[in-house]
Length: 225
Image (tube, rainbow, N blue to C red; front, side):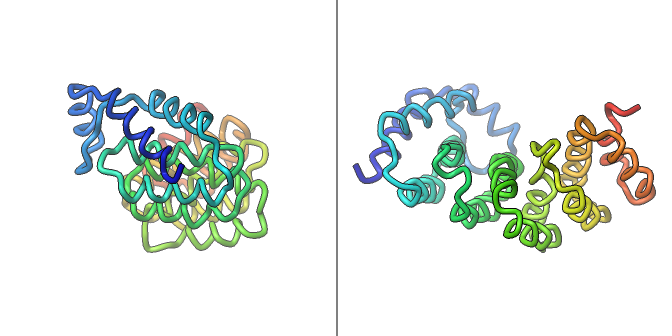
């Protein structure tokens, strides 16, 4: 069964290819890696169905398939499929997934891949705070802005479990950055957390208003008035 799942996933993705949609998707993503034109929910269905048919024997086996599918990908959807494999419950709390997520962020180097693993990192943070907290503080100042984006968005889905000090640290470290994807991430993260704790977001914005970019400020205050 060695890498049989990968072969099946590739076959099913090819079967669902839509050339017209592929051209539009590639143009939208501004990607040098071609697309098959398979919709994201369809990719996810293919991955989960395949994993159900051929269950993984261990987390290590899953990591091996994810890494191989990621590294050998010739279509963007194959990389989406690799990320979707990491959504399986068997690895949701597995710290050994962390190097793989970092590899995906650094080598993927685009917002869809980075954001694709942000909730995985969030889950690890909830279960391994003593390990993830100092790591994400380091990531917040990493030379690679995609790693910094991951640090900023790592608590997007944390809601009431958000570590506010860590969030502020990640945001503060990047307020001066002129990169669009960083400014967008700052605003997005504040906007999402405002749904849980609007007072904290208002306070954060008011004390840093002069340092926030117009884009970040606009996004942060989108639903706060």
